[in-house]
Length: 484
Image (tube, rainbow, N blue to C red; front, side):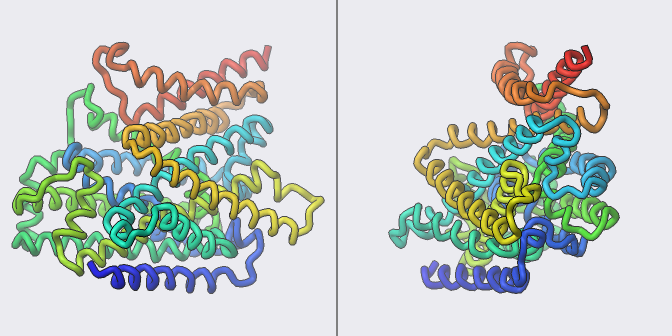
Protein backbone atom coordinates (compact mmCIF):
# COMPACT_ATOMS: atom_id res chain seq x y z
CA UNK A 1 0.00 0.00 0.00
CA UNK A 2 1.22 3.48 -0.86
CA UNK A 3 2.84 5.11 2.21
CA UNK A 4 1.23 8.45 1.41
CA UNK A 5 -2.20 6.83 1.38
CA UNK A 6 -1.58 5.44 4.85
CA UNK A 7 -0.33 8.83 6.06
CA UNK A 8 -3.43 10.52 4.64
CA UNK A 9 -5.68 7.99 6.44
CA UNK A 10 -3.85 8.54 9.71
CA UNK A 11 -4.00 12.33 9.48
CA UNK A 12 -7.64 12.32 8.40
CA UNK A 13 -8.74 10.13 11.27
CA UNK A 14 -6.69 12.10 13.79
CA UNK A 15 -8.23 15.34 12.53
CA UNK A 16 -11.69 13.96 13.28
CA UNK A 17 -10.62 13.15 16.83
CA UNK A 18 -9.16 16.60 17.41
CA UNK A 19 -12.31 18.23 16.05
CA UNK A 20 -14.39 16.37 18.62
CA UNK A 21 -11.84 17.19 21.32
CA UNK A 22 -11.97 20.90 20.44
CA UNK A 23 -15.76 20.98 20.69
CA UNK A 24 -15.99 18.98 23.93
CA UNK A 25 -12.98 20.54 25.63
CA UNK A 26 -14.14 24.15 25.61
CA UNK A 27 -14.48 25.75 29.06
CA UNK A 28 -13.14 22.58 30.61
CA UNK A 29 -12.51 22.22 34.34
CA UNK A 30 -11.93 19.27 36.68
CA UNK A 31 -15.66 18.56 36.96
CA UNK A 32 -15.90 18.24 33.18
CA UNK A 33 -12.66 16.26 32.96
CA UNK A 34 -13.63 13.77 35.68
CA UNK A 35 -17.43 13.53 35.28
CA UNK A 36 -18.48 15.44 32.12
CA UNK A 37 -20.88 17.40 34.35
CA UNK A 38 -22.97 14.18 34.52
CA UNK A 39 -24.68 15.20 31.29
CA UNK A 40 -23.85 12.41 28.81
CA UNK A 41 -26.80 10.85 26.92
CA UNK A 42 -26.99 7.19 27.98
CA UNK A 43 -27.38 5.89 24.41
CA UNK A 44 -24.20 7.70 23.33
CA UNK A 45 -22.31 6.16 26.26
CA UNK A 46 -23.69 2.68 25.49
CA UNK A 47 -22.75 2.85 21.81
CA UNK A 48 -19.29 4.23 22.53
CA UNK A 49 -18.60 1.60 25.17
CA UNK A 50 -18.88 -1.12 22.52
CA UNK A 51 -15.57 0.06 21.09
CA UNK A 52 -14.08 0.56 24.54
CA UNK A 53 -15.09 -2.98 25.54
CA UNK A 54 -13.68 -4.50 22.36
CA UNK A 55 -10.38 -2.61 22.07
CA UNK A 56 -7.41 -3.69 19.99
CA UNK A 57 -7.19 -7.09 21.65
CA UNK A 58 -10.63 -8.09 20.39
CA UNK A 59 -10.14 -6.49 16.99
CA UNK A 60 -6.97 -8.46 16.29
CA UNK A 61 -6.91 -11.41 18.68
CA UNK A 62 -10.48 -12.76 18.70
CA UNK A 63 -10.61 -13.51 14.95
CA UNK A 64 -7.22 -15.24 15.18
CA UNK A 65 -8.22 -17.20 18.28
CA UNK A 66 -11.04 -18.92 16.35
CA UNK A 67 -8.43 -21.32 14.96
CA UNK A 68 -7.76 -22.79 18.41
CA UNK A 69 -10.92 -22.05 20.42
CA UNK A 70 -13.58 -22.00 17.67
CA UNK A 71 -16.74 -20.18 18.86
CA UNK A 72 -16.28 -21.07 22.57
CA UNK A 73 -15.60 -17.39 23.28
CA UNK A 74 -19.28 -16.71 22.57
CA UNK A 75 -20.28 -18.66 25.70
CA UNK A 76 -18.11 -16.23 27.66
CA UNK A 77 -19.99 -13.33 26.05
CA UNK A 78 -23.35 -14.82 27.08
CA UNK A 79 -22.00 -14.88 30.62
CA UNK A 80 -21.55 -11.12 30.32
CA UNK A 81 -25.34 -10.76 30.49
CA UNK A 82 -25.34 -12.00 34.08
CA UNK A 83 -22.36 -9.84 35.01
CA UNK A 84 -23.84 -6.68 33.53
CA UNK A 85 -27.11 -7.34 35.36
CA UNK A 86 -25.16 -7.44 38.63
CA UNK A 87 -23.47 -4.16 37.71
CA UNK A 88 -26.82 -2.52 36.96
CA UNK A 89 -28.67 -3.80 40.03
CA UNK A 90 -25.92 -3.91 42.66
CA UNK A 91 -22.93 -1.71 41.83
CA UNK A 92 -24.42 1.27 40.01
CA UNK A 93 -26.97 2.06 42.77
CA UNK A 94 -24.09 2.22 45.27
CA UNK A 95 -21.96 4.44 43.03
CA UNK A 96 -24.80 6.85 42.32
CA UNK A 97 -26.05 6.92 45.90
CA UNK A 98 -22.61 7.93 47.11
CA UNK A 99 -22.12 10.29 44.14
CA UNK A 100 -18.66 8.85 43.45
CA UNK A 101 -16.14 10.19 40.98
CA UNK A 102 -13.67 7.38 41.63
CA UNK A 103 -15.39 4.09 42.40
CA UNK A 104 -12.58 3.12 44.80
CA UNK A 105 -13.74 5.83 47.19
CA UNK A 106 -16.33 3.25 48.26
CA UNK A 107 -13.55 1.21 49.89
CA UNK A 108 -12.58 4.19 52.02
CA UNK A 109 -16.11 4.55 53.38
CA UNK A 110 -16.50 0.82 53.96
CA UNK A 111 -13.10 -0.27 55.31
CA UNK A 112 -10.66 2.62 55.64
CA UNK A 113 -7.78 4.39 53.98
CA UNK A 114 -5.48 1.37 53.59
CA UNK A 115 -8.15 -0.55 51.71
CA UNK A 116 -8.95 2.51 49.63
CA UNK A 117 -5.34 3.07 48.55
CA UNK A 118 -4.88 -0.65 47.94
CA UNK A 119 -7.88 -0.89 45.61
CA UNK A 120 -6.85 2.19 43.66
CA UNK A 121 -3.23 1.02 43.44
CA UNK A 122 -4.26 -2.38 42.11
CA UNK A 123 -6.36 -0.68 39.43
CA UNK A 124 -3.51 1.66 38.47
CA UNK A 125 -1.07 -1.25 38.21
CA UNK A 126 -3.43 -3.44 36.24
CA UNK A 127 -4.71 -0.74 33.90
CA UNK A 128 -1.20 0.58 33.21
CA UNK A 129 0.08 -2.84 32.16
CA UNK A 130 -3.14 -3.76 30.36
CA UNK A 131 -3.39 -0.49 28.44
CA UNK A 132 0.28 -0.64 27.48
CA UNK A 133 -0.11 -4.21 26.28
CA UNK A 134 -3.11 -3.28 24.12
CA UNK A 135 -1.32 -0.27 22.68
CA UNK A 136 1.76 -2.39 22.00
CA UNK A 137 -0.31 -5.05 20.25
CA UNK A 138 -1.87 -2.58 17.82
CA UNK A 139 1.09 -0.22 17.33
CA UNK A 140 3.38 -3.20 16.74
CA UNK A 141 1.15 -4.27 13.84
CA UNK A 142 1.45 -0.81 12.33
CA UNK A 143 5.19 -0.92 12.86
CA UNK A 144 5.66 -4.33 11.20
CA UNK A 145 3.31 -3.80 8.28
CA UNK A 146 3.79 -0.06 7.69
CA UNK A 147 6.45 1.94 9.51
CA UNK A 148 9.35 -0.52 9.20
CA UNK A 149 9.14 0.02 5.44
CA UNK A 150 9.64 3.75 6.01
CA UNK A 151 12.57 3.24 8.37
CA UNK A 152 10.72 4.95 11.25
CA UNK A 153 11.91 3.68 14.67
CA UNK A 154 9.36 2.05 16.94
CA UNK A 155 9.87 4.59 19.71
CA UNK A 156 8.99 7.44 17.33
CA UNK A 157 5.84 5.60 16.26
CA UNK A 158 4.74 5.06 19.87
CA UNK A 159 5.70 8.57 21.00
CA UNK A 160 3.63 10.12 18.20
CA UNK A 161 0.67 7.91 19.05
CA UNK A 162 0.80 8.63 22.80
CA UNK A 163 1.35 12.35 22.17
CA UNK A 164 -1.77 12.57 20.02
CA UNK A 165 -3.85 10.83 22.69
CA UNK A 166 -2.39 13.12 25.33
CA UNK A 167 -3.32 16.19 23.32
CA UNK A 168 -6.90 15.35 22.48
CA UNK A 169 -7.77 14.15 26.01
CA UNK A 170 -5.78 16.86 27.81
CA UNK A 171 -8.61 19.31 28.36
CA UNK A 172 -11.93 17.53 27.95
CA UNK A 173 -11.01 14.26 29.67
CA UNK A 174 -13.96 11.90 30.07
CA UNK A 175 -16.33 14.26 28.25
CA UNK A 176 -14.12 14.02 25.16
CA UNK A 177 -13.74 10.24 25.58
CA UNK A 178 -17.51 9.66 25.66
CA UNK A 179 -17.87 11.27 22.24
CA UNK A 180 -14.67 10.03 20.62
CA UNK A 181 -15.66 6.50 21.67
CA UNK A 182 -18.65 6.78 19.34
CA UNK A 183 -16.27 7.51 16.47
CA UNK A 184 -14.00 4.60 17.44
CA UNK A 185 -16.92 2.20 17.64
CA UNK A 186 -18.26 3.31 14.27
CA UNK A 187 -14.98 2.77 12.45
CA UNK A 188 -14.34 -0.56 14.15
CA UNK A 189 -17.76 -1.87 13.12
CA UNK A 190 -17.41 -0.52 9.57
CA UNK A 191 -14.02 -2.20 9.28
CA UNK A 192 -15.51 -5.45 10.56
CA UNK A 193 -18.41 -5.40 8.09
CA UNK A 194 -16.33 -4.40 5.07
CA UNK A 195 -13.71 -7.04 5.86
CA UNK A 196 -16.36 -9.77 5.91
CA UNK A 197 -17.90 -8.49 2.67
CA UNK A 198 -14.56 -8.35 0.80
CA UNK A 199 -13.34 -11.75 2.01
CA UNK A 200 -16.64 -13.51 1.31
CA UNK A 201 -16.79 -11.89 -2.15
CA UNK A 202 -13.29 -13.14 -2.99
CA UNK A 203 -14.43 -16.60 -1.93
CA UNK A 204 -17.48 -16.33 -4.19
CA UNK A 205 -19.95 -16.46 -1.30
CA UNK A 206 -23.19 -14.63 -0.73
CA UNK A 207 -24.60 -14.03 2.77
CA UNK A 208 -26.46 -17.34 2.93
CA UNK A 209 -23.64 -19.50 1.58
CA UNK A 210 -21.12 -17.74 3.84
CA UNK A 211 -23.31 -18.44 6.86
CA UNK A 212 -23.73 -22.09 5.93
CA UNK A 213 -20.02 -22.56 5.24
CA UNK A 214 -19.02 -21.20 8.64
CA UNK A 215 -21.74 -23.04 10.58
CA UNK A 216 -20.92 -26.36 8.88
CA UNK A 217 -17.21 -26.06 9.67
CA UNK A 218 -15.49 -27.24 12.84
CA UNK A 219 -14.55 -23.62 13.49
CA UNK A 220 -18.09 -22.82 14.66
CA UNK A 221 -18.06 -25.27 17.58
CA UNK A 222 -19.29 -23.43 20.64
CA UNK A 223 -19.67 -25.95 23.47
CA UNK A 224 -16.71 -27.94 24.79
CA UNK A 225 -17.75 -30.54 27.36
CA UNK A 226 -14.42 -31.73 28.77
CA UNK A 227 -14.29 -30.29 32.28
CA UNK A 228 -10.48 -30.23 32.19
CA UNK A 229 -10.48 -28.11 29.02
CA UNK A 230 -10.00 -24.36 29.45
CA UNK A 231 -12.83 -23.97 26.93
CA UNK A 232 -15.33 -26.00 29.00
CA UNK A 233 -18.63 -24.20 28.45
CA UNK A 234 -19.69 -24.00 32.13
CA UNK A 235 -16.36 -22.43 33.07
CA UNK A 236 -16.65 -20.04 30.14
CA UNK A 237 -20.14 -18.87 31.11
CA UNK A 238 -19.34 -18.35 34.80
CA UNK A 239 -16.07 -16.68 33.92
CA UNK A 240 -17.85 -14.33 31.53
CA UNK A 241 -20.15 -13.16 34.29
CA UNK A 242 -17.28 -12.34 36.66
CA UNK A 243 -15.11 -10.84 33.92
CA UNK A 244 -17.91 -8.40 33.16
CA UNK A 245 -18.28 -7.53 36.85
CA UNK A 246 -14.59 -6.84 37.49
CA UNK A 247 -13.43 -5.49 34.12
CA UNK A 248 -16.44 -3.18 33.77
CA UNK A 249 -18.13 -2.79 37.14
CA UNK A 250 -14.93 -2.57 39.21
CA UNK A 251 -12.84 -0.78 36.60
CA UNK A 252 -12.52 3.00 36.84
CA UNK A 253 -12.00 3.34 33.08
CA UNK A 254 -15.34 1.73 32.21
CA UNK A 255 -17.32 2.99 35.17
CA UNK A 256 -16.16 6.58 34.76
CA UNK A 257 -18.05 6.65 31.46
CA UNK A 258 -21.17 5.21 33.10
CA UNK A 259 -21.00 7.77 35.88
CA UNK A 260 -21.26 10.60 33.34
CA UNK A 261 -24.90 9.63 32.69
CA UNK A 262 -27.51 12.03 34.05
CA UNK A 263 -28.95 9.66 36.66
CA UNK A 264 -29.06 6.05 37.85
CA UNK A 265 -31.92 5.15 35.50
CA UNK A 266 -29.94 6.29 32.45
CA UNK A 267 -26.84 4.47 33.67
CA UNK A 268 -28.82 1.21 33.96
CA UNK A 269 -30.21 1.67 30.44
CA UNK A 270 -26.66 2.14 29.22
CA UNK A 271 -25.38 -1.06 30.87
CA UNK A 272 -28.26 -3.26 29.73
CA UNK A 273 -28.11 -1.90 26.17
CA UNK A 274 -24.35 -2.48 26.03
CA UNK A 275 -24.69 -6.06 27.30
CA UNK A 276 -27.15 -7.01 24.55
CA UNK A 277 -25.28 -5.19 21.78
CA UNK A 278 -22.04 -7.01 22.58
CA UNK A 279 -23.58 -10.37 21.65
CA UNK A 280 -24.21 -9.72 17.92
CA UNK A 281 -20.99 -7.70 17.63
CA UNK A 282 -18.89 -10.57 19.00
CA UNK A 283 -20.74 -13.08 16.82
CA UNK A 284 -19.71 -11.07 13.78
CA UNK A 285 -16.09 -10.96 15.01
CA UNK A 286 -16.11 -14.75 15.36
CA UNK A 287 -17.63 -15.14 11.88
CA UNK A 288 -14.82 -12.97 10.55
CA UNK A 289 -12.28 -15.20 12.29
CA UNK A 290 -13.77 -18.34 10.75
CA UNK A 291 -13.81 -16.69 7.32
CA UNK A 292 -10.15 -15.69 7.64
CA UNK A 293 -9.17 -19.33 8.23
CA UNK A 294 -11.44 -20.66 5.48
CA UNK A 295 -10.09 -18.00 3.11
CA UNK A 296 -6.54 -19.08 3.95
CA UNK A 297 -7.37 -22.74 3.32
CA UNK A 298 -9.06 -21.97 -0.02
CA UNK A 299 -6.22 -19.85 -1.41
CA UNK A 300 -3.31 -21.73 0.14
CA UNK A 301 -2.23 -18.89 2.42
CA UNK A 302 0.07 -19.96 5.24
CA UNK A 303 -1.40 -19.41 8.70
CA UNK A 304 0.97 -17.20 10.73
CA UNK A 305 2.57 -18.77 13.79
CA UNK A 306 1.10 -15.90 15.82
CA UNK A 307 -2.65 -15.99 15.30
CA UNK A 308 -2.78 -12.25 16.11
CA UNK A 309 -1.09 -11.68 12.72
CA UNK A 310 -3.78 -13.50 10.71
CA UNK A 311 -6.23 -10.63 10.27
CA UNK A 312 -3.55 -7.97 9.58
CA UNK A 313 -1.68 -10.12 7.06
CA UNK A 314 -4.78 -11.04 5.05
CA UNK A 315 -6.19 -7.49 5.15
CA UNK A 316 -2.94 -5.79 4.17
CA UNK A 317 -1.36 -8.38 1.88
CA UNK A 318 -4.07 -10.55 0.32
CA UNK A 319 -7.29 -8.55 0.05
CA UNK A 320 -6.58 -5.43 -2.01
CA UNK A 321 -6.20 -1.73 -1.27
CA UNK A 322 -9.75 -1.07 -0.06
CA UNK A 323 -9.58 -3.84 2.51
CA UNK A 324 -6.22 -2.54 3.68
CA UNK A 325 -7.50 1.02 4.05
CA UNK A 326 -10.59 -0.08 5.98
CA UNK A 327 -8.51 -2.34 8.20
CA UNK A 328 -6.18 0.55 9.05
CA UNK A 329 -9.14 2.74 10.01
CA UNK A 330 -10.43 -0.02 12.26
CA UNK A 331 -6.98 -0.62 13.71
CA UNK A 332 -6.49 3.05 14.53
CA UNK A 333 -9.92 3.15 16.16
CA UNK A 334 -9.02 0.10 18.22
CA UNK A 335 -5.67 1.59 19.19
CA UNK A 336 -7.09 4.95 20.25
CA UNK A 337 -9.98 3.37 22.18
CA UNK A 338 -7.50 1.14 24.03
CA UNK A 339 -5.48 4.07 25.32
CA UNK A 340 -7.50 7.27 25.59
CA UNK A 341 -9.98 6.07 28.21
CA UNK A 342 -7.20 4.34 30.14
CA UNK A 343 -5.09 7.50 30.26
CA UNK A 344 -8.05 9.52 31.53
CA UNK A 345 -9.03 6.88 34.11
CA UNK A 346 -5.47 6.56 35.39
CA UNK A 347 -5.24 10.33 35.73
CA UNK A 348 -8.56 10.40 37.56
CA UNK A 349 -7.73 7.58 39.96
CA UNK A 350 -4.24 8.84 40.82
CA UNK A 351 -5.42 12.44 41.24
CA UNK A 352 -8.40 11.60 43.44
CA UNK A 353 -7.45 8.35 45.17
CA UNK A 354 -3.71 8.74 45.70
CA UNK A 355 -3.21 12.52 45.78
CA UNK A 356 -6.63 13.30 47.30
CA UNK A 357 -7.03 16.19 44.88
CA UNK A 358 -10.78 16.72 45.26
CA UNK A 359 -10.63 16.65 49.05
CA UNK A 360 -7.69 19.06 49.30
CA UNK A 361 -9.16 22.36 50.40
CA UNK A 362 -5.77 24.08 50.52
CA UNK A 363 -5.51 24.15 46.72
CA UNK A 364 -7.44 26.54 44.52
CA UNK A 365 -9.37 25.23 41.52
CA UNK A 366 -6.65 26.55 39.26
CA UNK A 367 -3.97 24.67 41.22
CA UNK A 368 -6.05 21.47 41.10
CA UNK A 369 -6.38 21.74 37.33
CA UNK A 370 -2.63 22.29 37.02
CA UNK A 371 -1.94 19.23 39.17
CA UNK A 372 -4.36 17.09 37.18
CA UNK A 373 -2.65 18.13 33.93
CA UNK A 374 0.76 17.25 35.36
CA UNK A 375 -0.52 13.80 36.36
CA UNK A 376 -2.00 13.37 32.87
CA UNK A 377 1.37 14.10 31.24
CA UNK A 378 3.24 11.80 33.65
CA UNK A 379 0.96 8.86 32.90
CA UNK A 380 1.33 9.45 29.16
CA UNK A 381 5.11 9.21 29.57
CA UNK A 382 4.71 6.14 31.80
CA UNK A 383 2.58 4.35 29.19
CA UNK A 384 5.15 5.23 26.52
CA UNK A 385 7.93 3.67 28.62
CA UNK A 386 5.90 0.50 29.25
CA UNK A 387 5.10 0.03 25.54
CA UNK A 388 8.79 0.42 24.65
CA UNK A 389 9.69 -2.12 27.35
CA UNK A 390 7.26 -4.61 25.80
CA UNK A 391 9.00 -4.09 22.48
CA UNK A 392 12.45 -4.55 24.03
CA UNK A 393 11.40 -7.79 25.71
CA UNK A 394 10.42 -9.18 22.29
CA UNK A 395 9.35 -12.43 23.95
CA UNK A 396 5.67 -13.18 23.39
CA UNK A 397 5.49 -15.68 26.27
CA UNK A 398 6.95 -13.16 28.73
CA UNK A 399 4.64 -10.38 27.52
CA UNK A 400 1.58 -12.63 27.80
CA UNK A 401 2.60 -13.56 31.34
CA UNK A 402 2.85 -9.89 32.27
CA UNK A 403 -0.60 -9.28 30.83
CA UNK A 404 -1.94 -12.30 32.72
CA UNK A 405 -0.37 -11.09 35.96
CA UNK A 406 -2.06 -7.71 35.44
CA UNK A 407 -5.36 -9.56 35.21
CA UNK A 408 -4.69 -11.18 38.59
CA UNK A 409 -5.01 -7.82 40.28
CA UNK A 410 -8.74 -7.69 39.56
CA UNK A 411 -9.30 -10.67 41.89
CA UNK A 412 -8.58 -8.70 45.09
CA UNK A 413 -10.90 -5.94 43.87
CA UNK A 414 -13.65 -8.54 43.39
CA UNK A 415 -13.08 -9.91 46.89
CA UNK A 416 -12.93 -6.49 48.55
CA UNK A 417 -16.07 -5.11 46.90
CA UNK A 418 -17.98 -8.38 47.48
CA UNK A 419 -17.07 -8.43 51.16
CA UNK A 420 -18.04 -4.79 51.52
CA UNK A 421 -21.37 -5.13 49.73
CA UNK A 422 -22.58 -8.49 51.02
CA UNK A 423 -21.43 -8.37 54.64
CA UNK A 424 -21.56 -5.74 57.35
CA UNK A 425 -18.42 -7.01 59.04
CA UNK A 426 -15.53 -4.69 59.96
CA UNK A 427 -11.93 -5.56 59.10
CA UNK A 428 -8.50 -4.60 60.36
CA UNK A 429 -7.88 -2.09 57.62
CA UNK A 430 -4.09 -1.89 57.87
CA UNK A 431 -3.77 -5.62 57.06
CA UNK A 432 -5.95 -5.50 53.93
CA UNK A 433 -2.95 -4.75 51.64
CA UNK A 434 -1.31 -7.99 52.86
CA UNK A 435 -4.40 -10.02 51.94
CA UNK A 436 -4.67 -8.27 48.57
CA UNK A 437 -1.04 -9.09 47.73
CA UNK A 438 -1.15 -12.71 48.93
CA UNK A 439 -4.35 -13.52 47.04
CA UNK A 440 -2.98 -13.27 43.48
CA UNK A 441 0.25 -14.98 44.55
CA UNK A 442 -1.68 -17.97 45.93
CA UNK A 443 -3.91 -17.98 42.83
CA UNK A 444 -0.87 -18.08 40.57
CA UNK A 445 0.65 -20.97 42.53
CA UNK A 446 -2.60 -22.96 42.35
CA UNK A 447 -2.98 -22.23 38.64
CA UNK A 448 0.59 -23.24 37.83
CA UNK A 449 0.19 -26.57 39.65
CA UNK A 450 -3.50 -27.24 39.01
CA UNK A 451 -2.99 -30.30 36.80
CA UNK A 452 -0.97 -32.00 39.54
CA UNK A 453 -3.14 -30.84 42.45
CA UNK A 454 -6.56 -31.30 40.86
CA UNK A 455 -6.26 -34.41 38.75
CA UNK A 456 -5.53 -32.78 35.39
CA UNK A 457 -7.79 -29.75 35.85
CA UNK A 458 -6.66 -26.58 34.05
CA UNK A 459 -7.79 -23.17 35.20
CA UNK A 460 -9.18 -20.78 32.64
CA UNK A 461 -10.78 -17.41 33.23
CA UNK A 462 -12.49 -18.81 36.34
CA UNK A 463 -9.20 -18.24 38.14
CA UNK A 464 -10.51 -14.72 38.66
CA UNK A 465 -13.30 -16.13 40.84
CA UNK A 466 -10.82 -18.18 42.90
CA UNK A 467 -8.67 -15.09 43.38
CA UNK A 468 -11.66 -13.11 44.62
CA UNK A 469 -12.72 -15.92 46.97
CA UNK A 470 -9.25 -16.04 48.56
CA UNK A 471 -9.42 -12.29 49.18
CA UNK A 472 -12.93 -12.61 50.60
CA UNK A 473 -11.78 -15.38 52.98
CA UNK A 474 -8.78 -13.29 54.03
CA UNK A 475 -11.00 -10.33 54.85
CA UNK A 476 -13.33 -12.60 56.81
CA UNK A 477 -10.40 -13.81 58.90
CA UNK A 478 -9.41 -10.20 59.50
CA UNK A 479 -12.97 -9.43 60.58
CA UNK A 480 -12.82 -12.21 63.20
CA UNK A 481 -9.69 -10.66 64.69
CA UNK A 482 -11.30 -7.23 64.55
CA UNK A 483 -14.35 -8.40 66.50
CA UNK A 484 -12.24 -10.21 69.05
